[in-house]
Amino acid sequence: MTGLSNAAKRDIETVLHPYTNLDTFRSTGPLIIERGEGIHVFDSEGKEYIEGMAGLWCTSLGYSEAELIERGEGIHVFDSEGKEYIEGMAGLWCTSLGYSEAELIDAATEQMRQLPFGHVFGGRSHERAAELAEKLKAIAPHDASKVLFCGSGSEANDQQIKLLWYYNNAKGRPEKKKIISRLQGYHGVTIASGSLTGLPANHMDFDLPIERIFHTGSPHYYRQGEAGESEEEFSARRAQELEELILREGPETVAGFIAEPIMGAGGVVMPPQGYFEKIQAVLDKYDIYFISDEVICGFARTGNMFGAETFGMKPDSISVAKALSSAYVPIGAVTIGEDMYQAMIDESKKIGTFGHGFTYTAHPVAAAVACKTLEIYEKRDILSHVRAVAPTFEKRVLGFADHPLVGNARAKGLIGAIELVADKETKKSFDKSAAIGAVAMGAAQKHGLIVRALAGDIIAFCPPLIIKEDEIGEMFDRMARALDDVEAHVQKEGLRG
Picture 1 (tube, rainbow, N blue to C red):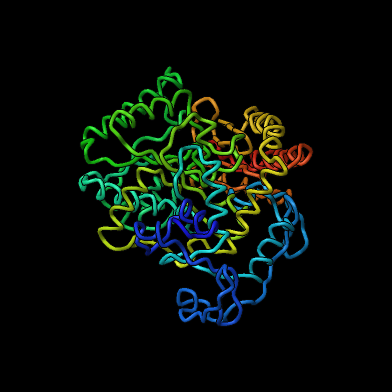
Picture 2 (cartoon, rainbow, N blue to C red; picture 1 turned 120 degrees about the vertical axis):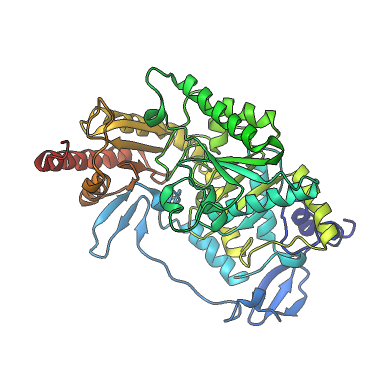
């Protein structure tokens, strides 16, 4: 790397470049594009280039254009009539810093004016890519060597599959390709990541899952624990089932296991006592790569920077998106360990290129907003704030367990859920035709609260991380009024049978 600029050296040590010979790239380094104007771009030395590829066939209007946004403020959003709602779901588990955060808007605007688009194919790069990769490497809950960017959590998990297959081919293990996910898990909606997702509606009539993707049992103790079975015993049973699946398929054919620290769309399912410790032991026993899907749990949501830290997981890689940019601009990423990176260099050298990447991989505007988001988390000590208000949040969620509609209440950090049932004693669910979850979501909306109804009449809560104690109180006061309305509806319609 002699003679390379500091920016180029930083990039080499952090960013994984699509469609690049990863071996030769280590010595040649990237072409750092710093700004753009019209049909021209300028590198870090000030040299001007005509952009003869419109970026990657895409910047049709050239460089240096403008912008537009909608109506939201802090933890509140406003409809077309001007009615105010508390955003109890942070959009879709994602607007961690709330709405109209000026520093994020400014970061996007500044970057748009300087370099609105820049790709990282073929050894090209820009400073925001390396800056963001450095920040992610520094906080990752495992020993990360490189970061491969993308546009969403679905793409991140799709990449995880491809990288694991690529890695095992490079290591001379072409049969080690099967990946195990979990029933009720949610990992995206592409063909591959949608196959990892363990929800029936995401598979039915889409011809999913694809081959080499398997599912083991969910950690949903409330619904799936057997009579008299403790959480530890349930966790041991789930670990045994995983081991039996691995042995049935052949350990030499199983490449990886993916899990959300807390299941999100599958019902905000918390891992029962001892769960990940027992799962980890099985994975270690059979040399199975462990992916932590941190798309929802990452960046302080559970009271630590990553859910893996909260639950004692030891992943080999993580997938991130959503709160990486507070959802202001789409961006996702996966972290890669040194062993995988070295194998990728060898394979890239053999083939002549690393044949993977998206047009928007490490998009400079998305990267700039993500860098600013991580900076805000640090300088405002969002982690300490979450830890300070989480007890109030958790107490209010768990307090709903006393309501006649609620069979189970669960929460960790600033994510939680209540599960609505027809009979608390037997855990009997309402008939699907009653659509009680949707009724509760509508009642909450009437009271000025946005929540999400998940399958199984589960109401999920995931407010922006900036929520204050009094706002938590108001949020759940509105939910309490909504639940009382739903209970009145249930009694009036005789829905308990």
